[in-house]
Image 1 (cartoon, one colour):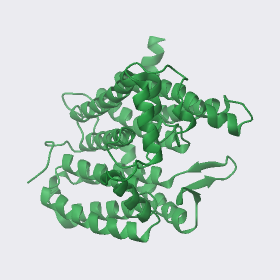
Image 2 (cartoon, one colour):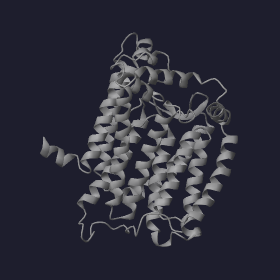
Image 3 (spheres, one colour):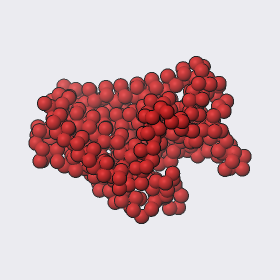
Image 4 (tube, rainbow, N blue to C red):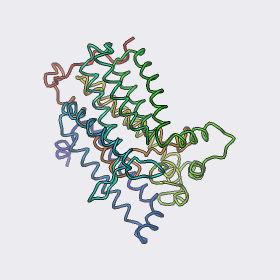
Length: 390
């Protein structure tokens, strides 16, 4: 078994272990959180969502395994094609009326399999990969605004601007991830400040022209104005956390899952704390922090600029989303509707999460296989140093 694992599961073994542990936790918690929903929608078959979610978890792990077997340098070329596909998909979803939930057109329904798909998941993965590619190819000219930074800003502006029309939280999180990646890629702070100003203007215009302005204003107001009544979902999230205590009520014994909206996705962290206590919530948080540490360790061990930037961007994207989701559940931020990566029940989002992690593993595998003294197997330029250029 050990030899088989070494041959087939390459890359960072600790990262593999973290992903497998989180996937196992996801199956157990989603099974508990969807008990009432499954009973209502499946004629009492409470295992229906368990089998569906377990199948999607295995599918996501399959895509992760396949992605980690590919030389990560190929993703530099693939990212541009993925961006060119994602732009018309985002436009079609918004203007032609994709599948709508909560007054937002974010999904397309894939024919035959009748499975919803968020083009923003593809766009997010493609933008981070292409941004890493553009910055790595121009490390020696990173101060050149016209040839280096203008293309970067155009792609970031187009993708984030299209996403914010129907999904403000995903667009803002993606924009923050891009800024972090530019910081690591040594982009001058004055140019990053220009990008922030442009992002604020275009983001505000996108919100005003899109579907979610009223929802965003309402959620921010509810969070900042303490005189208002606590929103229903946040109130029951607090109840779940408070009644969970230190050790929790035990697996499958949540009561708030019957009341809390979307306990299997947006507020799954509250169910984890209710059933497994603050200790269980702390373990999940530490697993995500360990994931970020291993992702950044891959960056530090990277011999090529593209591999380091790619691993950093994808690691930050996943962990920042996880921290935002957990922060919302405990009242540290306004309600966003972002799922918890690797834990929340989802459809194609689990596949794109698996692809992202597979690419990180591909980078760690490639850096382990390159000859440390010469770097002959890596044809990408090396990163002279990390951090911004002033």
